Each structure stands twice: as C-alpha cells, then as structure tokens.
Length: 306
Image (cartoon, rainbow, N blue to C red; front, side, top):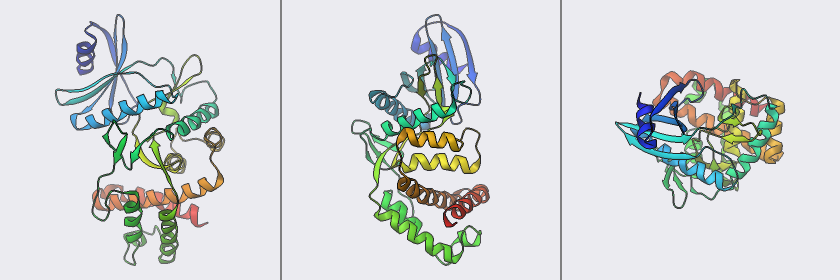
C-alpha cells in the first residue's frame, strides 16, 4: 500500500495498521497509518496537484498563527508520480457526526472565517505563486486577464443579444439588461480581498473531546470577502447538499462572523456572477455540465429578480 510506504519512509518506523478514509475527502485519496508511536493521515493525488499541497500547508500554518486549530503538517512531497501530504492525526468526530449542536459548530466556523479573512495576502485567484509574501494569482483566459476586474468585465461582455444563456432559458433579454447593471455595480464596489478557505463546511471540521472545532481540507483562493465564502454556503443551500447549513445554522454562521444585511445583498449578486461564469465555462469546456449549471443559474436569477 503506497500510503504505508510513504509514511514508513518518513517516520522510519514499522507500520502496525492502516486504513482508507472513505467518503470524507472528495479530491484526494486519504489514508490513516499507525506505527507504535505515531498515527498520521496520508493524503495522496497525482503529482500535478503538488502545488495544491504547498498551498494547503501554507494556509494551515497561517490559520494556526491567527488562532484557528488545524492538523500539523509533517511533510509534503512527490514519490513515484504521486504528490502526498502527511499530517498528524486529529482525534475527534467529524462535524457531521458530532453530538455538539450544529449551530454551535457553524457559529465557530463563522468566527474562523473572519480570522481567515484577516490573514495577509496579495493578488487574486487560486494559485499561490509566492508563499513568502502570500501572493496569489488567477490564470488568464480568452476574454479575461486573470484580474478581478477582468473576471467581472468578461461576464458583462458575455451578456449579448445572442447569449447562449438566453437560448438556455436562464435569462430573458430584459433580465440580461438588469444583470448587466448588477455586474457593473460589482465593478465599482469597494471590495476587500482576502483568503477564502474554499470549502468552509461542517464536513471539513473535527470536534474533539474538549468541543474544540478543528478545521481541515483547504482549497483556498484569494477572492472578495466575505462574499466568496458566504456565496458558497448559499450555493450548497440552493442545491440541497447534505452538509449545507439550514436557516438556523446559516444565521449562527452570520452571527459568528458578524455579517451585515448590506454585505448579504452584495453576496447574492456575487453568487449570480459566479453561477454565470461557471455556466459559461461549462458551455466552453464541459458540455455534460451545461444542464445542471444552467438550472442552478436560473434558480439564482429567480431568487434575485423576485
């Protein structure tokens, strides 16, 4: 078993037992490996994902520095075409399964989100290009230079009379004009850019015996905050995903963070922007996702236009 070899080489101890964690990690293969004196988690993926492990290690260390408990990262590397990260095992129960009221966990996640957004970063996007300065970047693509302004402008320019989104029934010609106004307003909004965890969710939290909430599984980017973080929770709610917060839990998150009604209003417009951008990506790159992405974008349009 590769996880045993990776952990054994690092710990220089004989492996006693190992097992795979199923269902909690979507992106990586996750295994627990035990020796006589250590219990570690080995996360593995294709070697091309190694930059994401560099980024996650950096994020965990920054988060711990501002008071957010996370797993200790013992080692990252590449072996036999496989990128890996070894973390100290975190004792406790997954937030989904914990007996602690979920509203309490969500409130704590709201507090953590505020702390995460206070971490010093530069740039915009999901690629950590300079860990020393905490500088992130977004790759450019046809129609956008990779900046936030470029991202918004690309989506404004895409709202044409011959827009596929009209053909797909996501918006009418009249709604397209209204959406264009909303996106123009986003361009002039005095946004704050900060670190976004990427999947702040109860499934990515461990609650230990002291009822301390420990945060896992970063897929971070620098984006407009708090909007990027809150929009993702709204996204999960609209889709009805199991781990999404209910109304009470969402309110607890808001209280934990301290989000205003005005910020929430802007967040809905950001959610619409992201839904349209994702749908345009699917039209260009992944035709099998066009139908579900269009259905979601239509739901967001209906929520905002009501």
